[in-house]
Amino acid sequence: MKPALTSLLLAAAIMAASANSRAQSTSRPPNIVFFLVDDLGWRDLACYGSSFYETPSIDRLARDGVRFTQAYAACHVCSPTRASIMTGKYPARLHLTDWLSGRRDFPFQKLGNARIHQHLPLEERTLAETLKQHGYATGHFGKWHLGEDPAGPLQQGFDVQVPRWNKGWPRAGYHAPFKLDGLRDADGDYLTDRLTDEALKFVEQNRDRPFFLYLSHFAVHDPIQGRPDLVGKYRRKLATMERGKGPAFILEGNPDDPEPLTRQDLAALMTRPSHRGFKALPRRTVKIKQHQDNIEFAAMIEAMDESLGRVAATLDALGLAENTIVIFFSDNGGMSGANLGNPKRIVPDRKLDVAFATSNLPLRGAKGWLYEGGIRVPMIVKWPGRGKAGTVCDEPVISTDFFPAILEMAGLPASR
Image 1 (cartoon, rainbow, N blue to C red):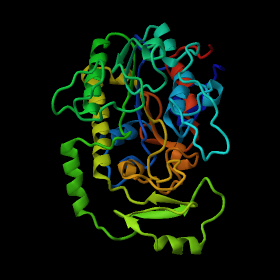
Image 2: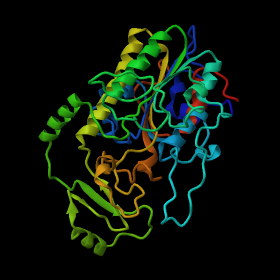
Image 3: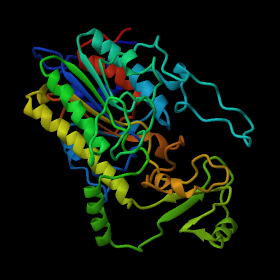
Image 4: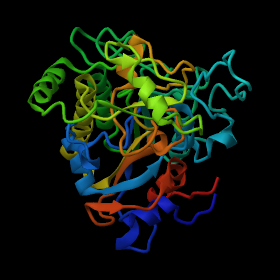
């Protein structure tokens, strides 16, 4: 890997204050907080244009750091992107190009799916392993989804893993009991809050040495379950909004089918019977959510925002904020469409809340598609003392940039 600065650093103008590639001289290397969100769309934050979701802590991070408008996940689903973050390699090079355990083959397919690794290969050197080698304490909190033991976080460079659950979704949802090994819960606990509690313990325990905190929330992956107090808040907010100014959903041609949707197709669709407001769609049609108005999903986003706020407050209280790099990212685009790989173009009731959780407009597509809505994600970097606060960067960057960039920001050799 070349030691030159990656596009992430160049594009952000983080280095504007100095030609030196090292952080400002301190008595120790910078701490690194990587705050990763699951299935968060490009427009799912107030600082990216949402008027329904409230994200004051993330907005504050954007004001204090660099907000990227063209940041991309290396894949349209989670596991490959996470592998790219950990290794700095594209998913195809890792033979890990789908979520784990990966899509099964369906009878209607003309070709079978490519066979992929079912874990991040142990011979790959991860970001955590590299930082640990240079004296960093390393903690993983939340979603891993890069393979079961013996290929979990503890075998890939992390000192601490909470919970001991390596799959890609919360085992029993976001409300206690979580049924997750290594994570205690009590009545009324909410998973996003409890993961934050454990992450903050790690920060406090390692306040006197450099640390790498990888806070990888399950949120906002399904099931769509908000914290009750915040659900109530957004229910009240939704009740005050003007309704009926446009359709809740729009239709576009199926991205998997190049044949355009005709006027006759649209006319035929309008005569189809509805089931609870959702229509069985013709083969070449995809239903796209137009409005952001899901109160449970909004509550999940704000709870995640509160988590970031608590991390920032703890760094301030411990006097660590000025020597801590904070990176905010999502593993793929948001959930806003009804295709979901279903050949009948209809979503069962149990998945309606997932498929239509948010809106990615004006981007086309959603999680699971290689259109912008599936791979373009929010990204914010705060590196105290470098660059101008509140910078907006339009340079394209991708999740493979993180590995070399973080090492360079920490003043560590990038070759391996």
